[in-house]
Image: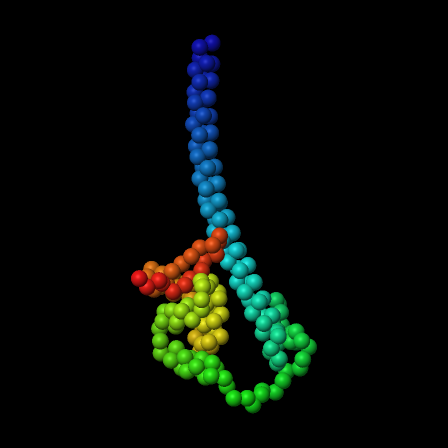
Length: 180
């Protein structure tokens, strides 16, 4: 009878070791999946914010006469006001448009970092990378900088002390660095 108890102790010990190892693997797996889930949630949040910004931009463009609104599936839709595309008006450009044109000519010569610094300085308050990219594409159409490129450049500016980063919930906003 002593022999079965020794076997029982050996089996229990083996199972206890196996269960401990399984629990450790389970905990590691949960940590990995939790980290992936958090990363995916951040990516989803960023995509939702980018979509909201793009929808806002689409609506504002749809309000302009002659500009087709782009739908979600990528097809062109008529302007929101139902107006037909208008012929280009022969109006003189405003001083602001002239200044923007001059800046565009200079922007091609300036590094992206300097252009983004100027954009941040021109606008009060912090701006998201998507907002900065939208202003960049509007003011400097010759620059084909995507949102990730703008975000990386802004992060480089933060690292060099040329800009500041502010996090609000899951969003990140950038502004010019405070000069002291």
